[in-house]
Length: 440
Image (tube, rainbow, N blue to C red):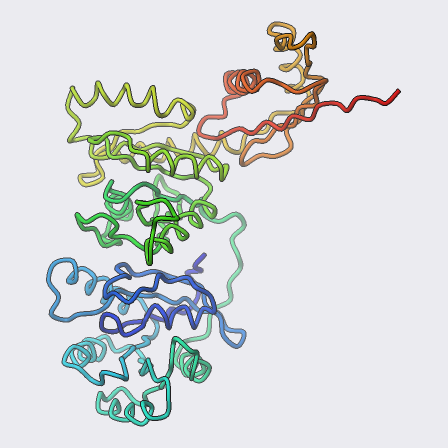
């Protein structure tokens, strides 16, 4: 998670000069999505980095094309924002190509920003190419640092140069707990990025009417209802992992990581379209991870009476396993009803963190078993002897029984637990431990 007190280094350069590969090399792990296609990184994405005992925040940006139009123009705008927010800039040039008109245009913008710049020549895989990097002195940004992001050549010297221009991090006392972590999940093009932008009050994430615009997860601290929240925007999940290729595969990994990191997942569904198999798969992922859940039906302005009729039927059929999740109807594009998100998040978190005292739980179980005993199976009738809550967030119960319980009876116990104690917005896990038979 990005600490706002750390110095910030923005990584900029033309499309496909190897910025994301270099980011991964600096981080020492595969975080940024890398593929040999220009424009895979579209938003500005923050990572925590460390070198020689000093921590800093690394901001990866989309390929910067000064003559950009449309989508590319918005990527350029995100890169410019990253530079304005950064303490220093790492400007990446492809040594195998040399200086281009686009590079010189970027240099003009960097000069205007007045931030310290570390110039690096990437793709320097041998000494022959290294000799060609000296021509980069002509950019007027000082000494070019030759590196091979792919093989790690020269990365240590580059990091030393970066630390030389970054300010020291101020003293930081870690906040206990910190802002609540919310992952915005859903299949491509349902409006996840539009929702995050509307919540943040700025064009924080590149939004385009093209499926799969967001590839990396993007953290954003947002103030809502007088409190700070950490939102994680994620890639739209289109395919099964085995079918996904290239950056889609890594995008899926990023999304599952975002779900794991989150406390609450907001599943964004397109209200104007039928609930799809991908929606159900994401839902299953959230449930299996044991995260609190809010379901947001977006694009509600496109839902007419006929669609509402069919949607009610789909909810009854497809969302029966998550009837406990708060549901809100919103239009992210205009901001209609997004003020309903915070109360829904609060209810889900409260349910997720609910603890039932052992005495109250066993009094409840005693009444339940007396009123609705387990059905007799093969002449035997298992009983619930004792129960205890072994975990909150997500609520997990251990039941000690005289025998194995039917799956239907376990579902019945869960349903009655919810009726008695709430548990809005959270999955519940029951662990049943049958008593071992004593040997004669």
